[in-house]
Image (cartoon, rainbow, N blue to C red; front, top):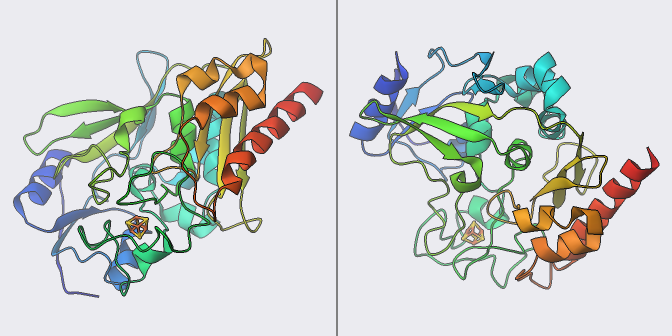
Length: 317
Ligand code: SF4
């Protein structure tokens, strides 16, 4: 691990300003992803600003009948919160499908959103990777790409966003609240939070330098049956080949977001409108324009099959 300096921030605005003024500075909270990347020298921050002392660990109702989740609420606490389990079951199911109990005890809401891809070439520092070293190339294109993206890809990067919780948040239209280094705040729709790779795959979110996530807000509950189905190579502690987050209503309408197929949680509201027509119609709209590789073309059919299974189970219930 490369040497770095360290400080503990006293307020969100101080933390944002501290990261903004130091080149190579990063925030750290649970550290469940960042510390691994630092040990492998994939990330080498010159300075860490620890935000764990900030009072961002509450889950509280909003004036709009939603819930505000502090950035430092652990994944375990969020998944087990009674209000979340009752009204936002999709969030609980997605979190429980991810990582291990030990990691969920330490990982935070904001950190979960910011976890980085598990593309194998991103982790192999002997390989070219535009995300790890901009301009160096992409070993995954023409390489081993079974786990990688089938839609929203570019000729610079075909990596996937690896998380589960954000897929549920995308289906529920959450917003991400931030504070900037000058102390101003803003809300980012989850749909706009994660970027597609384009020509700059190393820029993964809409956050500016020093901008700190303070909370995630869930809108008023939308009811329905919440299902998160994650298809992976083994039953636990593995990233999704495909995951489907669905909210199903009794009249046949609903919403769907998909993980494991793109550089961000994938949703298309026109596909939601096709829910009453069944899985093939939804998948057809969701995956219009998909550009899979020979290794991962199976994911296109897997999305449709997974959704078909969810709809069949819901009808039988
Ligand atoms: Fe790097 Fe993206 Fe290519 Fe993977 S797909 S090697 S993360 S540029």
